[in-house]
Length: 550
Image (cartoon, one colour):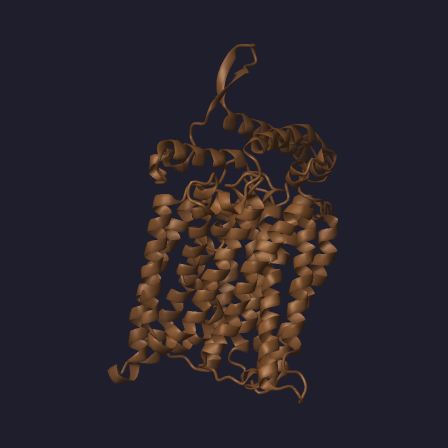
């Protein structure tokens, strides 16, 4: 047992997942942190606003504007200086923003306007850091994982995102119940506790290498070999460095991608950028960003009291965390596309049911309906919607941009993903409290319609990117351009079942045609077989984190 645990800790791919998980937990912590701070009377008084003021949503949402800008700055920095230095710079920025939020309105001489301004600035600066982390970490993680384990790794990392959300919410509940909603430390302590994440990350990231792809991109093949040796083992060095150099030469012929190439119609990377943009837009349209930030208010809308709603929300977040295990079990087995399509369908159904239940709860006294008759089904439906979102929509929109671009555009693609995520969530979190105040339970019907749209768009235009090399995924877009259609079903169902063939010699020296993708998959399968044979010889088990069985 001791040998297994030691091996698991020392495995570099497992360490990549653990460090990346801790980084992504920052975003989850912020969501859980603000959901109860928004209802703290001391906080509202310090900022000079009331609970139903649009400024409450504005304070939450400006964070996402910071994320959008931070994604651009961090991706450029990470491309120039390295993925690891990019992560460190983002952590320092997020930590500074968090400190400003903590001291906002501190001291009797501080005015409400100064407190509000400090909180806004802190939210924006923290957004710069977290947005940068969300842009760089998925790229860093995907470049250090096997092709058939990228989804599992990122899903495990996003499970940590939900851990952060739970940690913040539990901290909030415990301190609020202990100190009360009029105590300033009931909202300041949950803010400063977030500093534990940068401290852990500054320590853990030092254990990891730079990604081999970035090293090859910058002409440092020797450093790339050292990284491969540390992460994948000495037996992998020759094959992997050959593949990376070959891919890089091919990308060099096409030149470095610019944002104009990605955002201008007709640009070489415009098609994958549209897929990236719509993935994040559709994730925002699922409505679950609003559910995670304004969970207590939703359960109040279903008829529960404030304290009861907070405890039910905590149960929802814990259920969310548990169900993320299903996500990382399925995402590399079922695929990204199928999870998103099915997820959008069931979310549409869930929000349609919540519209009915919300309407009954709103008219409960008039119709003489007991609370449990609407409240309990509402809890069940919202818990199920939470699990569906976690399994189907939390991870794929972040994962796909790290898989469909060449190395010359991958960081920019991840940045665009975060920018769109930031702007879309800025709009959703800003408009949600306004929607609750004006549309009430009909807001659920809006989300039912937007989920239907998200599912239809994904079915038509989003290709499967799992169990493919980066180069195979790029071939899909080339074939789509040749066929003049973006509809997935017209481009070999987005499955890339047949790739351009290359002549190779079989064991008897006879030249045969084998698809380039098949060659890659055969080499990787053979490498995994060798590794498994060595492990079996020592009667050990492959570590779970960062791996999938073959």
